[in-house]
Length: 111
Length: 112
Image (cartoon, rainbow over all chains, first blue to last red; front, side):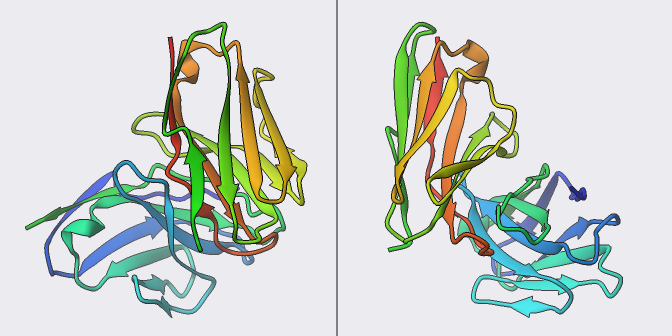
């Protein structure tokens, strides 16, 4: 399984945009890029995923580099509730749905 | 209903005890998963069930015994655990071949 590299921690101010980077230089052509986040004392929750094109949903946006070796999760206006560990995961299409979590980025949001 | 429930929330057990963790979902998902998460670490996959059959065992010690009695329920039977097995045990479900997994809140296990 291809590996992802994320900064250990990041800080943001409330109501400002947050850009969370992820490097995945060994990504294969069929790997999807998934993002999950884990709020304190909760299980992980799905945020967004994409293959090649940028993606938007109600939670976030995902910007994927043209060579797909990196991606950025964008939270448009951080709130205190967005303080969590954010995991960038490469998932090869298969029926198993297997997720291999990396170390993740701990996001702290300051009021 | 997009909820995965897990019981109990907390569990303390001795090394000679037998206990079970329970996970339930009513989303019609046919893939169910057990993950283990140690403090300050990411979740690690333990088992995958598809259509009530064990599909993947990530070389988990036999003191952990999963069971999927029907399409809504997933159990994890625990026997003769070690203190290093203390962790948060997470259950997840998803459509087989689908993109998204839905996680429960976990059971926090302490082995004394």
